[in-house]
Image (cartoon, rainbow, N blue to C red; front, side):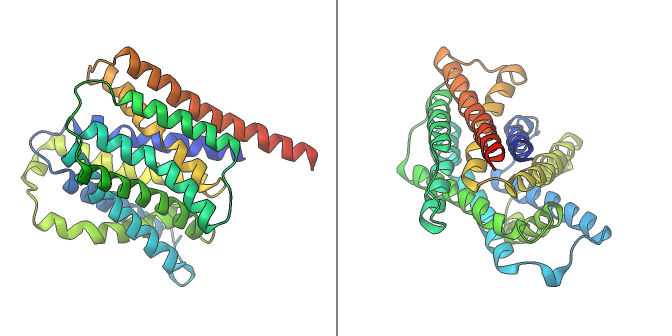
Length: 294
């Protein structure tokens, strides 16, 4: 059962990794923050309608403090991450945000939950972060700005906080209604941005399809998978597995967008994959050992 949970989180991260490739098909200039608000809105509200129609949400039983904190963390992640990318470039912004999230997650669990990260997590996280750094040394490097790096660190902390707090909500709710409520509230936090940003590009049929995919596939479905897996595994492990996102993005960049990776970047791919395999199968072996001894 626990092994399946790791696979769910891994699949979620792979879906997140398609976001950059999908956005490359958008025709015209689209502000990243507008894309973030639209994907949260489409993903959250669509899922909310489904959950309401299926009568899966019992509002009086919703753990509102955990839900609001989760929604705030996810809403905070969007502008921090996209602002970091704009200030210091996609490569540096992404590696700092996504690469720092497992570290923040392990620290939060250690300090708040008094749960010291185990050796498997430490090795897997170290390998994945080094791999992530090597991967994003590929291509032209942009100027590194301290403000952008600090914003990216904030994004990593926000995602780690989301993973930990939403786990509390998931302990009292099923994955689908939990994601529906959290992301609908999170979308409400970001909707005001849509009134000040240019949205004229949405009229293009291609853009409608891309944005619909980002909302349904890369948001609703991915976070249902992530939340389903998160119910059974530590948030630090789930966040480490999220490093499959840049791995997927790099592979899609090579085979779909026709980007070229250097030999150093391919070493990074191997380390990223190795870290994910260490975490997934290392945890499976540990779980099996516990089961056999009990």
